[in-house]
Length: 153
Image 1 (cartoon, rainbow, N blue to C red):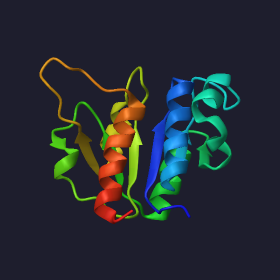
Image 2 (cartoon, rainbow, N blue to C red; image 1 turned 180 degrees about the vertical axis):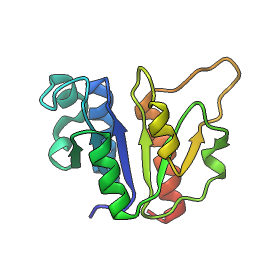
Image 3 (cartoon, helix red, strand yellow; image 1 turned 90 degrees about the vertical axis):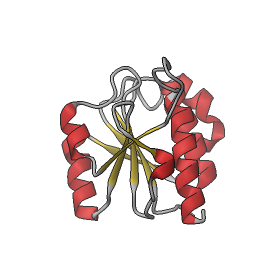
């Protein structure tokens, strides 16, 4: 059974990371939204290698672009929670809601300003000084794991 809590990937660059996130989401009962264009095709062998046989179990929705995703999100009345290195609020101090969408940006560039501004909340993973970022799949697992803990999932 799929949880209402969702993970969204904004124009992902790396097939292996997306495959890992899809595998994680399938195991945790989370749905994933991919906001296209992606930097690879969904038939990419690296995606399949990382996702293994879990890709068939994954609840995946593809959106043609940001506008299509945002129209769906607004119509669905869901809060958008952006994970960003530019945020100030640690994810551990945030109270997640069941209908939240956790948005992660491109591995190479994050999200553009208009997407950043559209987010209802912006969270970061606190790190030691000098560290820039974590792998997007690892960051997804950390923050989604906290959301699931809070939501009793």
